[in-house]
Image (tube, rainbow, N blue to C red; front, side, top):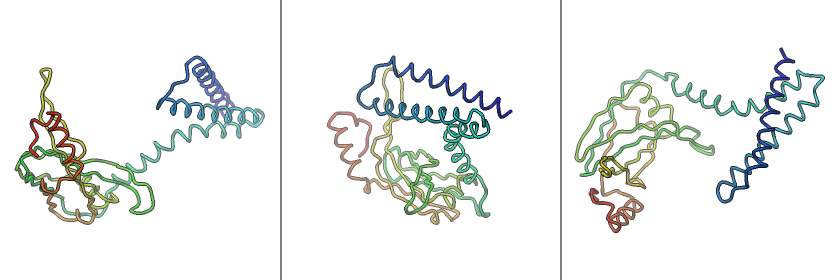
Length: 234
């Protein structure tokens, strides 16, 4: 079994290397941003060459050779394993708690997309990553209630390092016989919320147009100048 696995992986990697060499020899070298991916591909090919050559040196000791050939597979699987571990952590139930209801009060005449970004990672020092975004659409001058599932509630109240609350104005537009909604970028406003604030039964999200960011206001002025803000309200 070890011998078969060793020979199979050695053959597969050799075929991959042959295809890669032909590809890089025949295709012209790209310029601009594409050259970064091109150079990175060459780096990976060189690494695979090193693995294959090192494994071939252990032709008589196929157990060690197989272990060497498994290194690229493990490198490819590491992101998947890490993601599955994160999914398991997010899914695993925490302490019993009351259901969480979000109350979204839109105090503006705009259609607003409300996003709650759940960020994972340490609060300080380590890299943080966006795990999941909860998204709700709030109609102008409306108050809505959303009862969250236990899974989403524990993401906000305990699993995340912090939650980023982001508001986007939505413009209803049409063209070529189609109607669609477009978010104005950048966002109206955002702020980070500690998870302990969600350890309640009811959480109020108030949308106040007077707190819009300077970047958003500058974009609105630009859109007005270009006559692209016909349905906007700010």
